[in-house]
Length: 105
Image (cartoon, rainbow, N blue to C red):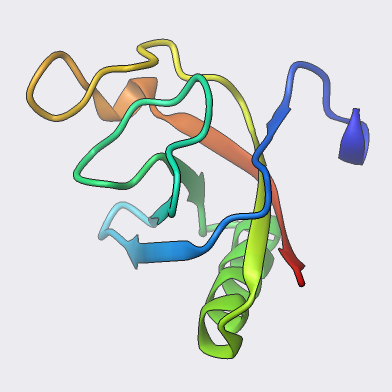
């Protein structure tokens, strides 16, 4: 498995549609096509903690890719509530956690 992670899924090359950082220090982001085994919160599918060095680095990669209009890939853990959204059972705790991001293309 890439990056030494077990039980991690990888997105295909995708366009970063949206990214935001909440007051809890987590970054939430969405790509052009919902990744497999994720849930959705208004178009955000993945999240990660920006309060550590790895999270800050991943946020930097995402923002750089967005500014350069490059596609990204993301590695993530599967959601425990895959297929749900804000209207039918979604919970933040069930969101997929991104364990890595990269720029492609």
